[in-house]
Length: 363
Image (cartoon, rainbow, N blue to C red; front, side):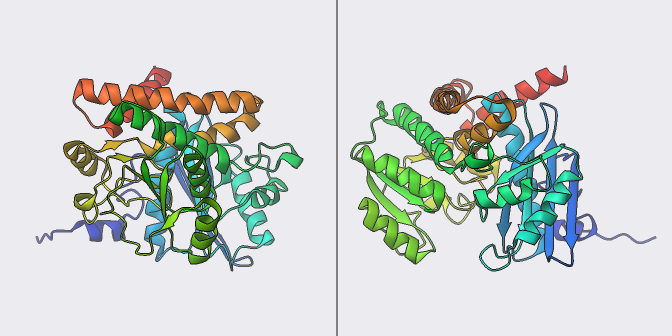
């Protein structure tokens, strides 16, 4: 008899789903393939305890399929806790389409993706995310009712980006209140990393309050446009982590708080729109706490988007959308208070609140 030691990378090859470190007891993973349109997509349904799994579709040119799978697993899990902590009767789901949204996205591809969504009979409801526009959701709507974030002309709540940004702004102000004793952002140095739809709106909001804004993005054209429009300072080097700022707002892709960046951070607050900002929730959450950096959990403060699209399902209007989004301020303060009282990280405090709602529903 012989035996061999199998390392984590080998496990990933043998069991790409169940052996994935981000799996976390997902209910269902759907792999979608269509040779005619070139569609290669993965739908992750993490948990439907509170309701159907709602989460956006991201189109991204991943380096490999393993990265795409890991992303959809992390994102769909995050949606479970996002809906739970925000008080919405929704589960957690997400989808990724592998490809370049600028060159490979077609109407036919979006319709075919919509057909795969429809085949799940409402267990998963999609919306827009990175690489997607409201128009894409309108196309998906042609083949399935299980889509949100459609245009206002077609009866939807429209682009969720502005309300997502507003929720992040509320969380940022709450973090400032906790850390500095005042939520006034006038004169505060704020680094916004990633200035797409959400990031640009955050730049607008904090600039109007008098903040000194620094922006960073891989898109040089967008950098120049936003800089000129709002008077923001461009930081051309993508290594932004050592900048001496009051607030760091990651608004691009996740995992920017990692072993390579965390020891260089000089920001006093982290509050941004990106999902899964902590590469390792436990390790990096603890390191932020030890460094005295106030971290506003991403899955809470970026929940404005799901609040916006949830309105399409239950029928509340813009005033209620804004009220629910503004409440992110109060919940963020509660989390800072709980974390300090229990001597735990803010990420763990937020997870505990979300998990308690899930547990109550099961019971």
